[in-house]
Image (cartoon, rainbow, N blue to C red; front, top):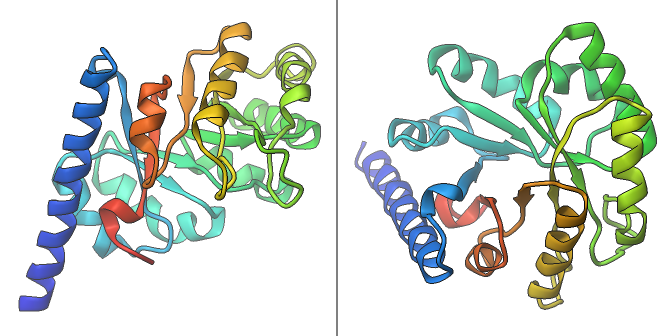
Length: 227
């Protein structure tokens, strides 16, 4: 019991610190902290680990895998109104039906096949999750995301060919690179395509992302601890 209390306290302490850092980074950048949404990345953590964060008032969460999310989020969403779930990991076309049914935001639209599949599922289910295009700003061959030089064409194709409403962009900079050029690049792509939502910045660099225009920061280990 004591261990549980300690663990809960640690999570809430870390959450409070992340909130304070977001607030400070936004104010330092001349921005309203309310314009930055914290996406609590709960991948690999069980419902019992997530509950204290929900109880503390957080309502936006990110998961990497459709199957893992299906196992824990339907009961959480049923018992807590107002929760918003983001898919922040790669989406396979054979999981598109489940993704559209469960997630409120899909952040990893990155190829024509998945855009076409999502369009079909949205039409069939009449659910309209918000969609972000993932941009592979570092052109890393092992990483998902449309290449920067192909982003404009892909966004236009999503809109015109598949009838999808693209509300945001997302990126994950290379681990060994300075993050700021990647965040700045994503911001430029968004600006010329009339996109307002920028999902960028994680536990190690979310303050820099806020300085460069992030509207959503995806923070996991800084809240929940190391996996």
